[in-house]
Amino acid sequence: MIRSLAIVGPTASGKTALSLELAERLKGEIVSCDSMQIYRGMDVGTAKATAEEQARAPHHLIDVVDPTESYSVEAYREAAIGCAREITERGRLPIFTGGTGLYLDSLLRSPQTDAPESDPVYREALIRSAGEDYVDTLWKRLRDVDPESAEKIHKNNVKRVIRALEIYDKCGVPKSMLDRRSRNAPQEISVLIIALDFHDRELLYSRIDRRVDIMMDDGLLDEVERLYSSGKLPPSATASQAIGYKEIVEYLRGKCSLSEATDKIKLASRRYAKRQLTWFHHREGVNQLFVDNGEGKIRDTSELVGEAMEIILRHPGTL
Image (cartoon, rainbow, N blue to C red; front, top):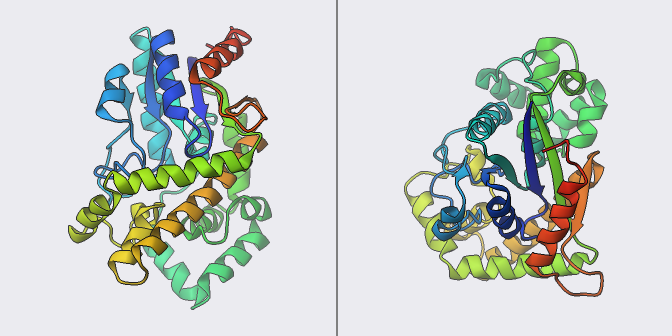
């Protein structure tokens, strides 16, 4: 059994800083658990660790594929567990860091060997058959055949809706049933999860707004413009839907002003953070670590490190 630690939570909550401190204390190596940091060239908008930060501890699963390429949850799971195994063999601790709940969940189940490979022809035919209002039509069909999955998948996440329908159509059983089988199978890896949280959501939202302003100052516009002009952000690519990139592309296409695009990034980031918090709140076995003190102030990183170490010491058999 591979033993590991995960530092997860919403965007702009301070995961990177805490993970680096813990990596230095625990002889750890950081494995990204972020679905957008896998893309090369998308640095500013995904808040990748800087060169200086990466020098403090080895980092893995960053800059894996080009933005034009697809990258599945199963591909992440296989690569992440492989990384964790190699890190463990070196006598070091894998520390998963990020905010993508789907990636974290993939580590906590067995491979979905019963699920069919994705078929682009099927996906295109399904969209065509659903007609102009395919977003609502496909989600309503999923609700009929697999209400459990429909409850977890937002209707606008068309890619995941179609994947769930594809599994049902080709396997004859709902995706939710396959997920349960995977969760009940023997695990390859043990993950002690520490999730950063906030008593005061407004503090988190103000941090998000400030981070977006910093990203703009650090060259997010130039980064997106470079990727877009070189054809690296086609509309069909998953990377094109990344928060920060989608909104700047709208500006580059003349659909809004730069200030409007910036406001849209802030709003989308706040909404995403809310969904992230909901995701981690609903997962069992998560250890909450509050970033603020409940009185309107952010706690020092050293204080958070101390509390994280206490959590780890309370679970001696996990690591």
